Length: 302
Image (cartoon, rainbow, N blue to C red; front, side, top):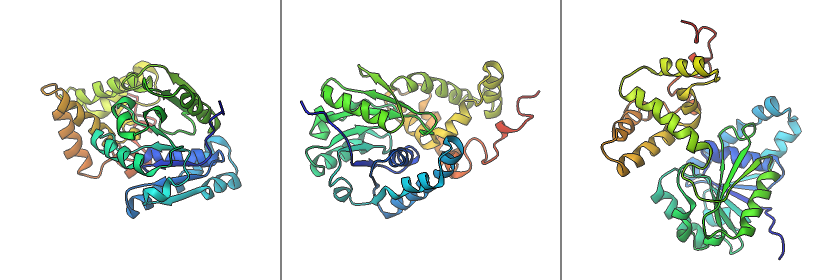
C-alpha cells in the first residue's frame, strides 16, 4: 500500500489555535491555506499570524529570513471551495460548539477533494460525534495541539473506531514533520490527555470564583505558592481564552443542569465576554496585559 503523505494543508478557523497551527505548519515548510467565514475574520487571522514571528525569533532562535519564509507560504480565503481545492489535509479549529462543527463538516465533505483527510483540533468533543457528518469517517480523526504550539509542541493524535489505521499513522508522521511530539491515543477520551487533566483543574478554580470563595489573585497565588507552578489557573484561562471557557461551561450547563455551570457561563459572559475581556488576545481577561499582576515581583508575597 502506498504511503500517505500530506503536502498541501488547509487550516479552517483563524482564531488563537488555528493561527498558530497555520504558522507552525508554514514555518516548517508546508504550503498552508487559511480559511475563515468572512473577510473580516480572515483579516483578523492574518493579523494574529503576523504577530507570531517575534516569538519564533525569541523562543526558537529563528532567523528573520526563516520567519518571513513562513509567512510567504500562507494564503488566505473566505471561500471554502478555493481554500481546499488541492488540500491533502484540512485541520479544523473552529468554535467548540457541536452544531457549528457539524454544519462545517457537512459543507466540507461536499467541497473537499476525495483524497482529503479531515482533522479536528477540538479540545473537548470526540471525533465520533462528527464522523458521519464528514461523509468520509475513515479519513477523519483528531490531532489536538496545545496553546503556544511552537514551544508547547504536543500533538495528541486520537482516532475514532472508524479511522483508517493508515490515516492515523500519516497524521502522526505529519505532526512530527511540523515539529510536534506525537502522542497517540488509541481510544476516544473526552479531553484527550491534556484536557482530561487541565479542564477539571480550571473548572475547579472557576467554581471557587463563582461561589465567591476567593478572588482571582488569591486562587492563583495559592496554586503558585503551594506547587511552584509559574502560573495559576486564571492566568492559564487567559491564554486558553475566555470564549473557550464559556463554550465549555455553556455546553455543560445544558447537559448537567443544576450543577452550577449555568452560573459560571453567565458570569463569563456578562463580566468578561460582554466587556471585551477575552484574555491575553484582547489585552485583558482575568488580568491586564502585557504586564499582568501575577508576573509582578511582589505577587507571591504576603
